[in-house]
Length: 317
Ligand SMILES: [Zn+2]
Ligand SMILES: [Zn+2]
Ligand SMILES: [Zn+2]
Ligand SMILES: [Zn+2]
Image 1 (tube, rainbow, N blue to C red):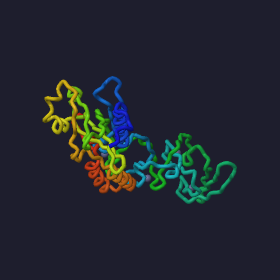
Image 2 (image 1 turned 90 degrees about the vertical axis):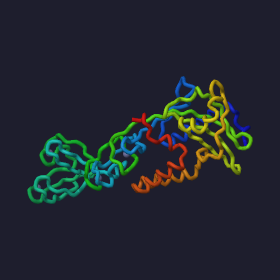
Image 3 (image 1 turned 180 degrees about the vertical axis):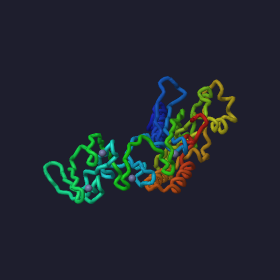
């Protein structure tokens, strides 16, 4: 037991910050309400409407072909070619290659480097129809139109590279629809008391009766001098069932002291097991190992004390 290093007044806000940090690690945005003492913070997250996985709300550029390895992959400039496309005839001209087929008759063209100052510039000449153009041309090399735009294409498959602003984190999911879900959180911080018990003050009137509301009891313990952070996460229903059955009458109109059962597995946060899962999950996502991802996500549901915030709740959408 080591309680003297933090004053009890401060400990409450430390608990809130610890919980907020744990939620931030799980892709929740955390806000503090200005004028509500019952809610310590509000957590919001983007999720996929189809599979309820986390949804990445950042912009990426990726290949637009669903069958390509680069589909939905955040690409760097080295992964795509900058080309030009004619909006009138649809011809795509790659000025960065020295090999070109004649846009008029499909014969292989001969290229000659015509200047080395600044950028490389090649003169292409068709061996068959004598059609010629330079690689620095701004107009269409096929029809001569000036109605041309930059057109980045995938190095693997040649399909167009397009910006996408969002995607489902589950690589097996092709959903384009997401939702913003919300949870309200009330944090109770508890020092370890005599006999390893934890306890917190609670007033029933403070409890918000909503499926999206969660109570988190934070406590800090020491095992062989190693600091441990414990989070006991309860939905309002779980709180009612597990905590209020005997003491409901005591809790009305007074500030009562509650002691969550220490032997309950929910109170223990196995940080090592949780971190192992998240590291493995990241690896599996990079490799797009869908079965492995499903398996680890199932495991996380058991290991992660905060996973219950992530389950679909009626009011979500
Ligand atoms: Zn999805
Ligand atoms: Zn030709
Ligand atoms: Zn053209
Ligand atoms: Zn591609």
